Amino acid sequence: MLKLREPQLTLWDSILPEEIRKLPDELAKIDAILDDERFMKPFLEKHNTHRGRPTVPIETFLRLMYLKHRYGFGFETLVQEVGDSITWRMFCRIPLDEKMPDPTTLMKACKRYGDEVIKQLNDILVLKLKEEGILKHRKLRVDTTVVESDIHHPTDATLLQDGVKVITNIVQKIKRFASHAVEGFEDKRDEIKKCILSIGKHLKRRTKETWEDIDKITQEVIQMTEDVCQKAENILENIKDKQKANIQVLTNKLGKAIDLTQKFIHQAKEVVRGNRVIPDRLVSFFDPEARPIKKGKLSKNTEFGYKLRIDETESGFVTGYEIYQGNPSDEELLIPAVENHQRLFQTVPNAVATDRGFSSKDNEKELSERGVRHISCPARGKKSQKRTDHEKRPWFQSLQRFRAAGEAKISLLKRKYGLNRSRYRGLFGSKTWVGFGILTHNLRRAAQMAK
Image (cartoon, rainbow, N blue to C red; front, side, top):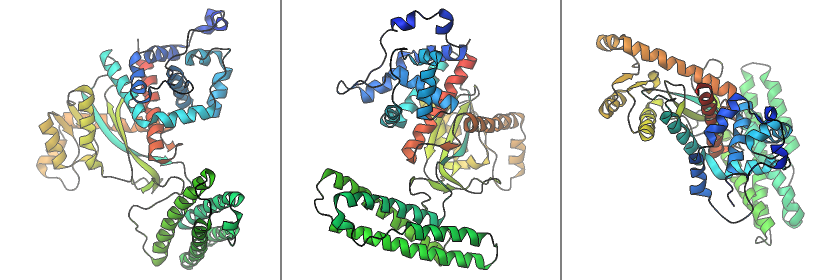
């Protein structure tokens, strides 16, 4: 049952001195912003039900998520810290004599509400700030970055090792209910672990023969993994009573684990054959939607995760964002950013500034047709004298300086709001993580700019 608000404060809250009940300036302003009834609308539209136990009140949930992403807490730490602080309890509307929500309850709530609700919340906040005259939207800068997945550095051998670990763990659970089906299955985890450790020793030598030796060891891991997958498939065939609920859940998990591991086997075989370029390459067993992305950084040649587009106006608020699987060209992402701006504010920006990755004649032509007056997108490659003169105009260079400030915003979001690494799994989880991070940033900036 969806619960929007907590009833009035209890007697214990009311007898507290005014000095204790008074919220700090930042929290008081954010509390006033979140009191707007429009923030309840996305939840009412998609999750309004009168069945089941009451949910954590939405007003409490939103404030808890703000504190979580504001200070980088985990769910358990969040519950502990808020429970120990009278000020934070007052901010989150949790009475002193009431038990704190369970961390698992908050995790499930994040998953249930999803990224679409969070994106709507950010839209509502942006429009509210526009109405109050805090947010201006005449200029738009667009940039992209990578949100890394919370995974270990992938190699072909370690990905196969992950697959074998998961398959073996599931088989051991199946053994409790159907011991007859797992006869003949061998635990290869220790053997594969020794192979992985030997790869590390070979890499220290840094000789020409090193890669040949590593390919041989990887081939051994491939053969052991194929054997594990084959025997796991035999287990699926030998299981009786497949209709039992607990066995059905385990067999479904085992089937998915086998399919994913076989994809890693195929990738590893291609690499051993000498094919190092594999399109749409998988880089994690636990986050199969993550992809390798090259952004030309000196510090990190390749990052593993998702591509994030960030749209920001001259007021410093992130008015739009989108997460993409893989590494689509920046050139394809500019028009969707302007369309999102137009959807929100019912008008195109007066000026658009990007780096040269977004530049193309088609993009400039379409933006001009949509009514954008000033387009500051440096051309790629060799430029004509006419184009060079165009890019030296004062307004063009001024917009490029405006664009450069967007790098600082990306750095801020990564350092302070968790956008450097998504702690939720999958594309859906990463969208939720990024959405909360950006919503938290916008709320805090709104509190800083509010009078």
